[in-house]
Length: 262
Ligand SMILES: [Zn+2]
Image (cartoon, rainbow, N blue to C red; front, side, top):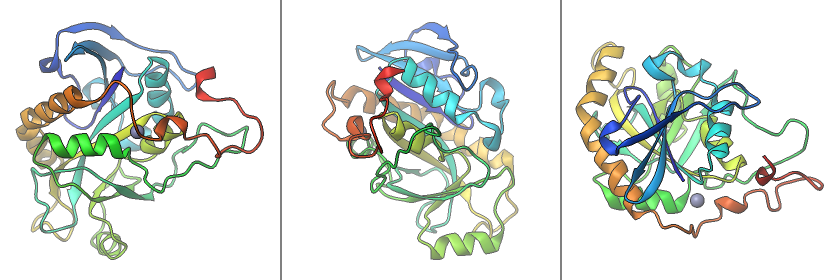
């Protein structure tokens, strides 16, 4: 099964296939958002609105553990997330899609692991699944690399913060990419993201940042994003060649439970 996590402005994607069934899954971290399960290109796909329907949860209140655990419980092996981001690079403009290859984590208050009662150190040299990234890059007109900076939010960033992120190598900035990418890796799922650039970041933008412009750009790009998702899903092989499914090999201290035991 393939999972799609819809970000800002993407709460349902009925265009992608005939909706079969709505599902809410219970997890030890709380119930999942209402998901839609449908068939696309002969594959079973589950769509989850990250912020719940109607954007009920702001980025710092999203239950990332419940979301990722629920997808795992549904049998999802590959996740494609969508995120709205600001650009810190003048060559990456509003309306562009970026497929991030790395991140800088500036979140402060989020729980970022499933493993509290055992010691697990996962490798994140390449945090995003290379196989899924290659598929996304080959399926549409996208910027193939970018370092995603995740802030705590919900406020936008200051001009000084953006200058710092740029100096550290950041390309795009958002509030929802972390810890999602890590939690998926911890449960041995492939995970990649399509970032829609909705604005230039603070001090690069000539004007004050507004939520309206974010939603406006996301809405304009919605059709292209859905086509990119659909074309990519058609190309995902039934057996993956990447290492995401064996993340816990060599990552655990002692004889520990694996995600298959969920
Ligand atoms: Zn993978």
